[in-house]
Image (cartoon, rainbow, N blue to C red; front, side):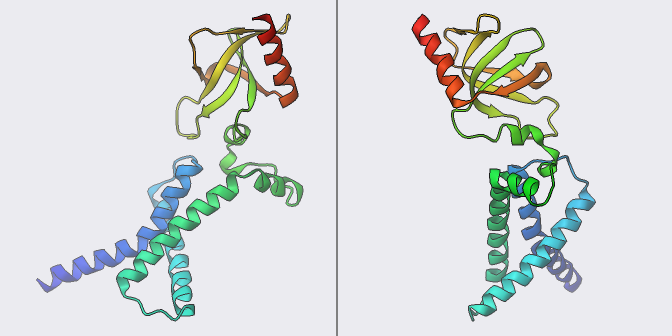
Length: 209
């Protein structure tokens, strides 16, 4: 019986050790997905991050001169892990992070090599022109885009889509369609349209109506 309780206690300590780092990784990759990692990599990173978080938690609690139980310590560990995961992901998704990388560090790659995500990480109501391999050209507002590189298919959702005639520079509204889902494998290229140009295109389309 003592061995049973001893084993259970050991498993409990292992879980407490790995959980903060594991949750950090899960929440971080949920916001900035990357290629799948092996179980060994995840375990190693979980241990490393958990050790860092434990040291930080101990330092913080001692600095505040607070008395705490092991449960309170572990909960603080988990909370800090989630907080830093959300904060770090937000920083890495920001335009300023990419600018600093390119301008001051000379790094032109994007987090986890996800240029697709960086390209579609835009402000609201960004209008794009999408060229399909069947010759169709769409103009619309970016609503959603795939973020997980492990997906077999990358997709792009356009809100208020219209057909664009390249020669006549004419827009045709797709009636009764709120949005359209485009398969990334069928997309040749995507152009971001400037605010001024998009206003002109939409203004011409309204006048012709």
